Structures are given as C-alpha cells and as structure tokens.
Image 1 (cartoon, rainbow, N blue to C red):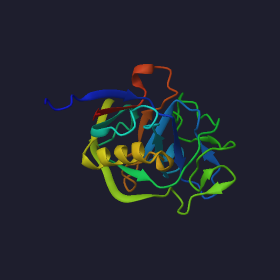
Image 2 (image 1 turned 90 degrees about the vertical axis):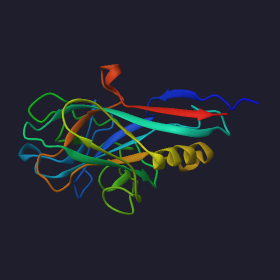
Image 3 (image 1 turned 30 degrees about the vertical axis):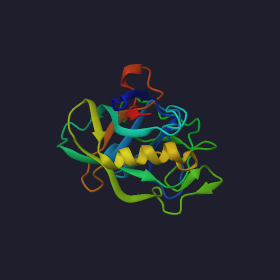
Image 4 (image 1 turned 180 degrees about the vertical axis):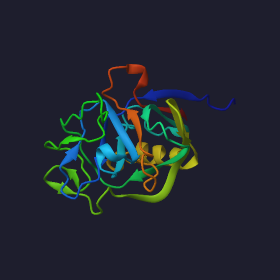
Length: 217
C-alpha cells in the first residue's frame, strides 16, 4: 500500500498585534498595517517592540492529521539604514490575547513605530486584553523554548521553519483551546535593530503574513 500523500495549505493569521514596551499598557496596534520586533531608535524612545501572531490551525486542517512541515513567512517593509543582520526568534505563546481597533498608521516619520492608543480588547505590553486582563509577565507569557529562528537583514520576505514549529502547529491542531500563536522577538539590546513587518491588515495582500503547513491524513 503506498504511503499517504502530503497535502499543503496556506493559512492567513486570525489576529496579530504589536506589544509596545510601556509600563501602563497605553500603546497597541491591533488594526494597523504593520508589526514590529526589536529595539527602536530615537523617534520611538529606544524601547522594545514584540509582535504577536496567531493562526486558526484547527479550522484549516482536518482533525487527526499529522503535521509534517510548517513555515511562517513575514515581509520586512522597513528597517534602519544602519541595520545589520539581526536574529529574530519565535516562541509559543502561553496565554490568549486580543486584537482591538488601535491603528498606528504607517506614514513617516515613525512608520507606525510609536504605536497608537490602546483600545478595548487590545494586547499591550502588560495586558492580554486591554484593559480587563493582564499577562503574568510584562511583555507576554511565552515558552522559553525557541520555536524558530532566522537571521533577518534587508527588505522583503523572510521565512521561519523547524521541528519545534511543526510540534507547535500539531499541538494547536490537537488542542485548539491552547492555540495562542507565537510571539516574535528580535534583538532587544541593539538600538535601531527593530524590523517592521507587514500585518494581516496590510493593503498589499501578497505582503501579509502566511503560515504554510504540510500534513498527511
């Protein structure tokens, strides 16, 4: 009997947002066109940004499937002119979080890096859902295990893949109630290391994040 053939599906995010380092949780970007990860420059106060992103895996794959591959692709739309290659890691989130209507519009000078006022249901640096529920740890609750790692430099698409990402996606398929997605963490030491990625609300559809999953039934 021949082995089962592999199937592939490309999944769009169900939600995404940016956690802007702020002790009061006043900033977010739930409905914005961009996401950020890393440490910003002077226009945004030299503070840390972390992106969060989730995919509804159980709605995209048949129950009982075996995940054999997982690749996250993000489009870098802006970086500092002084940027050097920067390692950006994915970690599996361990708490649910929200995407509100805040919108840090991308035009210059900051390109959305300053964030916008948090709105009801937004994830922030301290809130899972503004302003009714908090992370246990400021900056997000996530596994210490790195799910995927990639050196990022230059504009355009960059992809993350690896065995732990496959395990994460399989766990979300088997246990949808724990599908909280990944947090995207860049260089949080070097000033102007932050990268700007296009979000699921970006007006250019081809630049939006996507998760490519291969599986067998």
